[in-house]
Image (tube, rainbow, N blue to C red; front, side, top):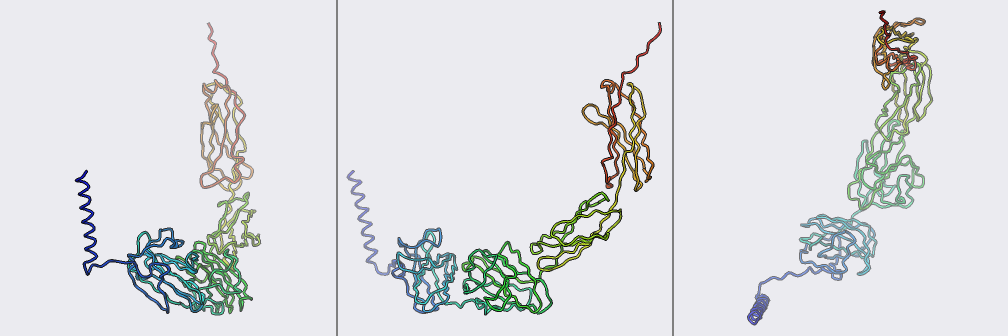
Length: 495
């Protein structure tokens, strides 16, 4: 125990002497936190533009450093402070730093700070509207470790040139595309409401003006970007504006409107001031209306109600109104619903669709309707009333046909007690005859199983070859009254 205690004492003494020697030896550097390491020692920004570079590797964290900007633990913060001399926009950035930084802007005093704006990254940038006489404190910090080589800059920036309705940016030609900067945009007093916004219509906005110098035509307006919306108005001043179209960003879907010749349309684009992605506005001519036409059934007869409809996958085309000319002298007025029509005679008809979109685009499309009525039927089905086992007896099926010469097949089946089982099949050409039929002759030999059951039921079915369909299949199948089947007769031999 004594040796161990002496050893520990020698180690402690050596460490103390080494530390003392290091303090006395000239030329040995000792890192210290930056001078603006704490909120109370924030570096004063006295004039704009302002830029500073400093090493924040030894920056420390105060217990009351705010952490509202991000979910990471704030480490190694430094502070800058500026009192705005005029109302307007200020932009702070850490662009040029060697690593990701957390940039947060505050107003208020220590212990009562209010978050204004923030951003993160190697080029963290935030823009906000400043009020003259208000002091703003900028905290720059690392994530889970102190920062490194920091570049910090602060400057005033001009508001968006088209921030106000009166300064709407002219749209020179179509198609037109632009990415406005909403960080320097504001909500102007008396701006009209929009039916496609749910933020109380107080989000930042910019304005564009388009005058249709050509003929009346349909245009589309769309925005792409979270939280964005586009609204289109007519009128000469904010109080006079009337909305003609509106669409919030819905996977980039546009809104369409009818642009009259010589009329100026004001396009307002709104978006969040802290948008994390570019917001894009696009104005263009609307695509041609090109709906698809559907008819059912595809091969109708005079007994069918033929259904017609027109549909488009393009949202700006909906709801379409469609009028129909069926090609046989009958028509249907414009409606958003499907319509149906029955043709009185076989023939080839050209039905015509006349569609109109909500913004006034039109389309006309013909569709050829071929009406063909195929109709065969079983007029008579003759089976024997009785038979004995082993007897072969005739069975006949008479088929009627009054419209077209048909190739018909008659299938003869018997019921075995569980299922229908085919026992014969004949295919014969059946001419079209108003009062005569064609007979399909069969012969059937009664089996021991038939005799065991005592009765046999027969079924006849007449079928037409694909793709021909029988227009009235109700008379294509007949089940006859069951035939009584007796056992085979027993011979009596004379002795």
